[in-house]
Image (cartoon, rainbow, N blue to C red; front, side, top):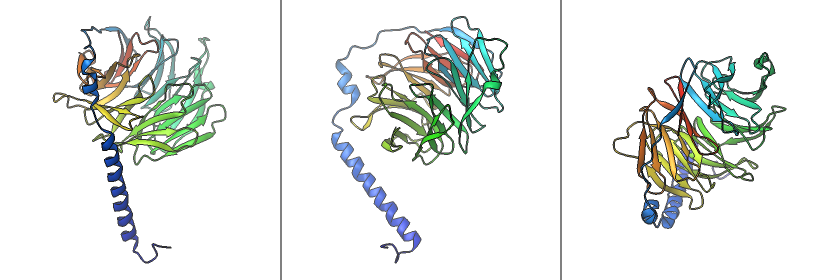
Length: 353
């Protein structure tokens, strides 16, 4: 073997320096393609007019910080999970609670609605992802029908069903993402590559798109091929943990929100960061991001209790929304694009339109 004559430390050091120089070359190649900024291209685009968004509904019932939420495909129901160990299904029109599950652990950091609307998935500090079927039988014990699907070696940070109820994608503090079969609980594919906790993931929007993006404490956003388990693209421009990633509606780009107080837009075809959404006055981290249905607006929830609305093309802030009384932890635009819901450490969820 070529490394026989070298000490262990020397080989590591030489490989490290080789990796760094290769990284430098990659950056140079990327920079060659970097001919123009997004906001320069968008200068001719009409500016957005004034628009008013208000809190239209407040969902109260959690006894502690709301950590995660997801919309049902029916555009009406919402599932939310909290630090109090409760997972609640709400009717966002009437604000009624339709189902409630008490998890065996506190800090339920992840929840997701199944595409059919007939089940929810959730998990957190129990290192598991559990699926609960939803029925209209009021007397039914939901906990009895619980199915443990995924097992990680550290906390579950995010989960999402793929395009069917049959598969679920999870992200964990153990530094991996994984794809599971819901029925059998079998591990179908695992994704290794993050150097620290994975905090968020998002599935590519197209029906055929077999890719997803994940972000984590290693400041990296990685795009994965679900079939091969390989990382196909990686972006490392944030200066702190990436708390949220979300695909652009067309699937050709994604946005990320980070503890470095910025949101960024990455173009997958150009293979680089194309925009940074930040202001001198914003010094708190962004916890959650999502696009409007058209992709023109980026909604971002921050740890300073506000929600900032960014013009994606021009890179400017078009609105700032006040209402929550503690940090905004989760934010999702409804499937029909007419409203969005935010969850906060103030124990409430708000529906804005």
